[in-house]
Length: 161
Image (cartoon, rainbow, N blue to C red; front, side):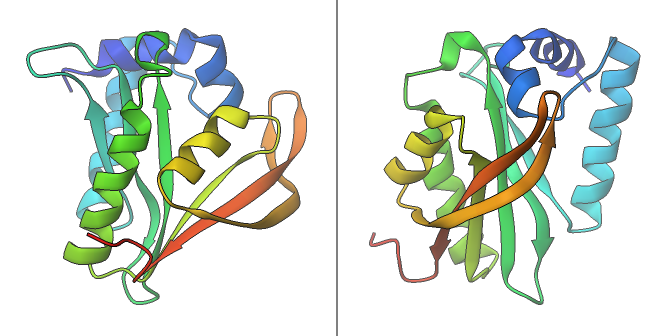
């Protein structure tokens, strides 16, 4: 709950708002959203973490959504504030979380989807070892309309330790 103020700040960042469905107007709404994240964690449907330096304020969020333990899959979720962009934070976080999801959770397939108009997320996926599988047409509604999305995936055995 202590990250609620950071969630409000992120919700006001134009890039975060453009590429994510993150809109919280105040700390109370942010706390309610965090509580929903905790409930999904307890239900084993998602696993979300703040991205922050030791003893520092959150710079972003990374996690897995749509976790399907029986089906062996999950989808990556992330955003970062301007101070963390271009520094490899999301790439490193994606690599670490991928290893955890494949090795510890025992998942088989991880998806990373992003608007084709978001080249930064495409670079994250490629640098983190996710193969581009194709384009999903009209797959996600953003504030400016429906976007085609790239579908990247990482499957068990792709990561060589």
